[in-house]
Image 1 (cartoon, each protein chain N blue to C red):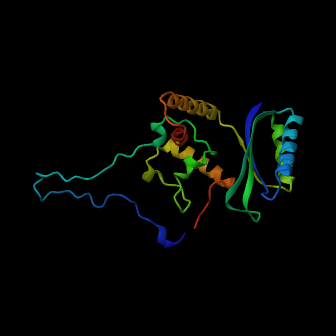
Image 2: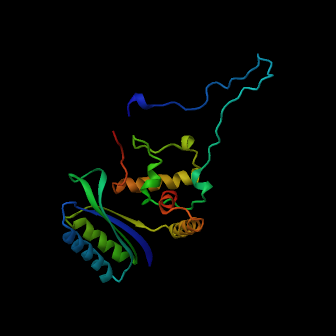
Image 3: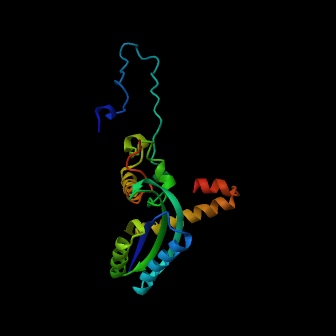
Length: 125
Length: 98
């Protein structure tokens, strides 16, 4: 079992419900493959740094999951085929990433204690 | 790449050994100490999702700032590089920008 991160971009012209349905279907793929979804984040519509398949915008979705390799292969296959997915990136999560998150959270907590206003904390984090 | 953006070595020009002046006034060469931002903060892993952080290392052109300019240590520059390349792949950062 390995931890993976995957991010994919959906076409911007989908409605909220359509997008949600697509995302749900991919979550379903993971659960069918006996993977456990750790994080499922919707970053929403963002401007792309360059044009991808005639689009300048995209709906970003981010998953973090623990699974066997087979689940990853299946998910990637589906993403490749799906018409509404314009790009995806699948990465094995770096073991140091968790430590880094912890460190960051600790830092944030420290700052909170010293009583910095919330906005400033965001900037420094 | 065109000849125009070659940009030389950025280094100080001619060592300026002041043999003639007798040396009673030491010539001040202003050197600001460069340091690795990541070592300073004890960062272990540079996340490719942290676009705001990465953006600080790519000026308008979209190129990665070299180590000799930013002062980042070799280890962190490597991590930074792969983070930026991943972010580029998923269109969070540009490959080039004009």
